[in-house]
Length: 190
Picture 1: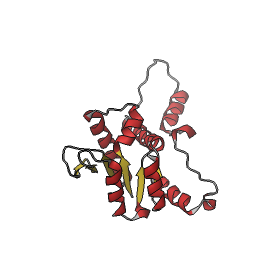
Picture 2 (picture 1 turned 120 degrees about the vertical axis):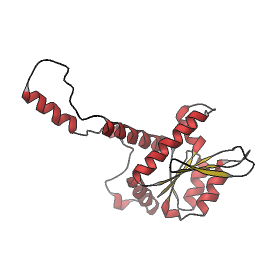
Picture 3 (picture 1 turned 30 degrees about the vertical axis):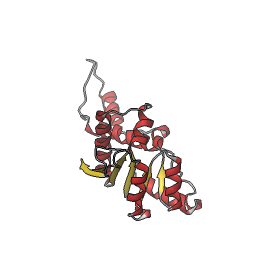
Picture 4 (picture 1 turned 45 degrees about the vertical axis):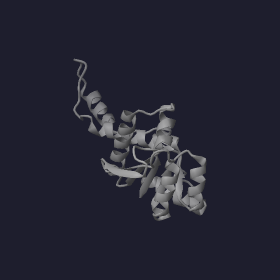
């Protein structure tokens, strides 16, 4: 699947500010690229403007980064890119209503900034959990083999709370409309 991300739309939603620094942009691109690599999805991040008058692109950590061109909107670049791809293989990530409407007219699934950021942060939390050491650090001199065994077992369990995962309707999935079923399939791949 190809995940097409409206870069500044997501970054500005996340940061809650009008200006996004170069460092914030680079960090976001790397985060998305790691996620795409881990999930075996292609990541395309499109930003407004750029240094050149013309649209330019480059690869950054397995993500295709596209700049629309000086004074040009990412929305137009996203539309051009998505028009050249198969609709059933695309997922648009943007909270721009006009862009989401354009995508829905072409049967392209879309998701807003809050849902994508939640998925991305859940992925980063899981990555941090996997990268931490599984060795046990005892902070007390007391000894209780039963308690130690219980704590070891509990540490290996991955408990997730419902609020940690984006809302995906699992029940009655066969009663969804065709477009909802397509979105559901794509969300399960995330």
